[in-house]
Amino acid sequence: MDEDEKDRAKRASRNKSEKKRRDQFNVLIKELCTMLQGQGHPRKMDKSTILQRTIDFLQKQKEITAQTESCEVRQDWKPSFLSNEEFTQLMLEALDGFLIALTTDGNIIYVSDSVSSLIGHLPSDMVDQNILNFLPEREHGEVYKLLSSHMLLTESSAVDLLNSNETHIEFCCHLARGNIDPKEPPTYEYVKFVGDFKFHNNVPLSSCNGYDLAFPRTLQSTLEEQICLVATVRLVTPQFLKDLCNVEDVCDEFTSRHSLEWKFLFLDHRASPIIGYLPFEVLGTSGYDYYHVDDLELIHILRNSLPYRISLKLFTINI
Image (tube, rainbow, N blue to C red):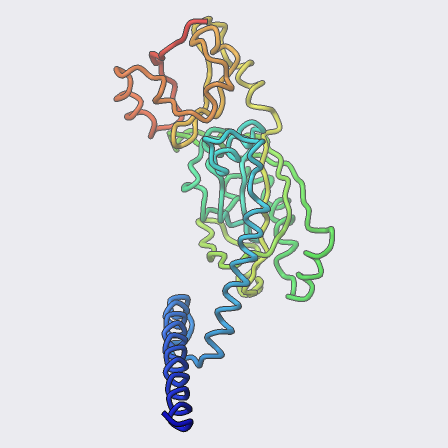
């Protein structure tokens, strides 16, 4: 074989290897393009655009992962059998509080599950309602003024404000408790809001649900990122003190509170002599682990009609 034939063989081998690499690269680019199309990107993109948008996506995912890790609850703070959400709810219950997110016109866009055991409302009953629907009329003006103070900001002034120390807000008001009978006059719980105004994406439009806004909707911010109030709401009078004051002096009765999944959130001090468990032993565990089989059907019927009071047989331990 002469030198020319050897060169041709080498070139053919290189060309074959190069073609194989190009084909593999094109297959990967095509897969990336297909994945990006599922994220709302155009159907036709050149290779450089596909690579650039993939880089942008990975950078965004890296930021989200970093934010998630910063919000993770340290393992030495919580039992291993509780998720972050369950642990957070337990902490809120221990503080007699719940989380809430409001738009600047008072529309409720999020409320945590712990609201149910504190003021008797299901989260689904409060979301998309206006917070003013749960306040006595005499407090409407003051609370609405606090929320709407950020409503008419321009984009530049909103950014300047949120970068300052003027985003924090604290105020007290009365919130209506949930009633089974809508004909009964509302009873109110005195609570304290502590929170901050923040930018949030994809905030749902408010339907107001019966409350007429003081400002025309056309004057409100049309920013893609809307300003919302994210706050914790705590009972001014702790629930534990109320339970002590309201409970009759009965030696075979105690009070417990449960999540929507029926996990123990609170167990008062009178339970230990009756059932043999200390409160920290049952917190975060399911009530169904302790109830007698004869009571399971009764619990299933009544748990959807909060609030209620029932007598149950519980498995006890010897102490």
